[in-house]
Image (cartoon, rainbow, N blue to C red; front, side, top):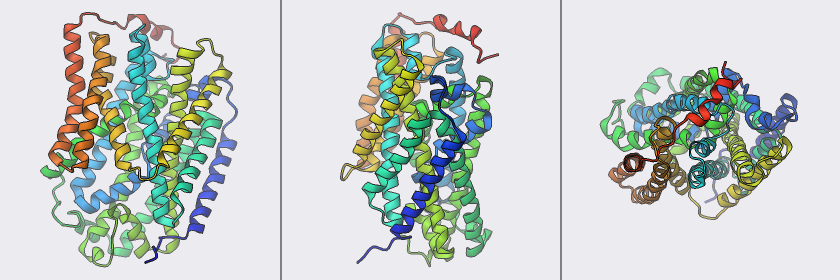
Length: 496
């Protein structure tokens, strides 16, 4: 039987082409050639609150999240969407004080690995392990967004997966390498506005067409009707614990978050991330309504839902005009591009400062640093796309690997920032052993679909880092204080 797509391949390409032209013109019109490396990498550290909030909010949105929020409300009702949304918002609030702390310690810094190099001088293995985790996490973001985009665009319009992967990466690569962080931020604002605009039009429209508030309320228990209690203990255990630990860990291993923390005025860091978290929360909350609508008995009986990830598309296709499906394609492209361009800028910043300037050319001028950033963006774009194009590669594999990386860094990063007694051995072995044990355990648990083991693996990845760091620090009396670089706080023109 010939597969039927939601929209034609030709229309899918037209939407994508229109988006590509528009976004490049916006970058060309609203940005200019950088005058310094700081402008290219951290936007001169002068990003205002509202720009920073929009940027970090949409950076945390990628296409599957647009679909998964509706999937969770459809399958698991109120508790499903609560445990998807709550930790997603909470991670912004957890990261904010860490960002403030790092900025106080290295006011003119660029990354967490750079801080490790300062705290533990002449210990390059510590710098390298944290740099590897950060690079790995952002490479994972590039791969999973390219692959997810290819799958989603193929599912919706029939566009060849390989072409979709290459095209999505190419557009984000062009303006990221060209205009750096300023280009990423201006496009983030447009992308977030488009996602909110489309969502806030389609949701009320679909609700009216399907019976209004009553239909939504009837779907609160999920398609099975069993999950009306928002604090359902089984959902909290099986999904809430691993989701919360994974999502809180994510930003702590993510240079995309640190880069925005370093680009924002010091006084505005907390507000930027708090507002960004609240702004982000609007998206899953609003789009989850599609899942509730589809789960209501009256609507579900007329839908033939074959893939619960696409439940929102099924609702729009059934009850709204065909052209509204174009909005879903545009939302997906905006969600993908926002994370891809941010990941490209992140690896460019990390590569230029933590590899090129640290190990290759310590006296590099601004022009060479910017050039190095573009080289690293190019290298990681090629690697990311190449991996995404591997036949048979699964989204789950990528998710597990970079999720394990993030969990391994959670406790060591917090202790590195706040605990003066954390020894050099602890700072290295904590994340290393956590990843070494946590990754295979997490992969086995998820592939075996053993719910209890999935929870154990999520908790173990975090606990191993904590236990190793504490034990090594207790028995290793070689301490590394903050004195050598906190003095920068007194002369920093960023904190006045």
